Amino acid sequence: MGGIERARAGRGGSGGATAGGRLPVVSSGSDSSGGSVAVRGGDVSVRGGKLEWELVLSRAAAPGSAPLAGVLQLAVSGQTARDVEGRVALAPVPLKLGAHEVLRGSAALPEGFRPRQTTIQVLDRPGGSQLGMRVLLVD
Image (cartoon, rainbow, N blue to C red; front, side, top):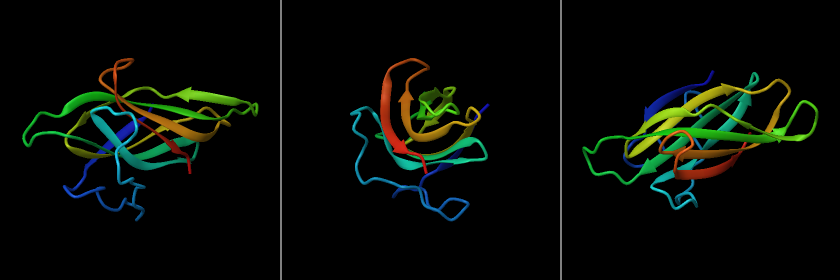
């Protein structure tokens, strides 16, 4: 249903420009979850009925340490086709996180759904403990 691509970020920051020439929106601080993974920022948009995302994640990791295995869980809030507030939980996406990662992916949304914001959680496993979190508005 959804896909994810990985592009390793440079040591100094956000990973550079995207294929479309845009830079991801990146905050200077970590997210407010207080977890071991910081969802630094990103870009979430809709194109052709799909939610597309580009997210910047980081964690404190010793050089040469093994990547952290977990899942990316996105929940999208917005208006349904019947014009009522709704929430769509997308399928968890497995990930392996080094010190810095830029994750890109997409997933289909229900027909007629108009997303407003996306809650991004990094969990240790599906339904597991939260390692990081951020809420982003959908462009």
